[in-house]
Length: 172
Image (cartoon, rainbow, N blue to C red; front, side, top):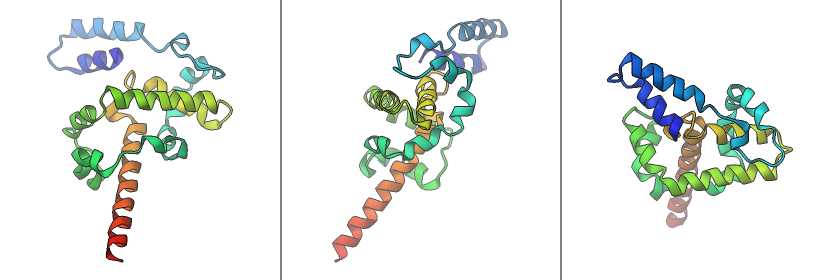
């Protein structure tokens, strides 16, 4: 969360160049360090070094059955439903997404990622999950993270499918 706040402050137009320079220096000091993350059999230094490459596939994790427990219902998605129907999030939607992901949901997502990483350390997706874990909210804000956006999109598709199925069954 600290990196996210610093990044927002650095990009704030009201911040002076001198303040921006100090904030950027602070941001560099708190870069991810392998010892911050406790994964049993994953080399976190290697993950950090390859983070940009690993994140290219990070959104795909949301479609794995291991993460289906994180999917949201149509009722839960109601505040974001219009944006999900458009398949596009507008800048004003980011505040809604941030509000949507309260501490409890964020904790559940992080615990699910951590459990996946520790249970499936041998999987090619384990390092990708580790990269997602490291960047969620720290390097990439929750509202902008590709994994979170894909999780919302997959949840929306699942909710639509369930609604269609229920409507079909009620006709019969």
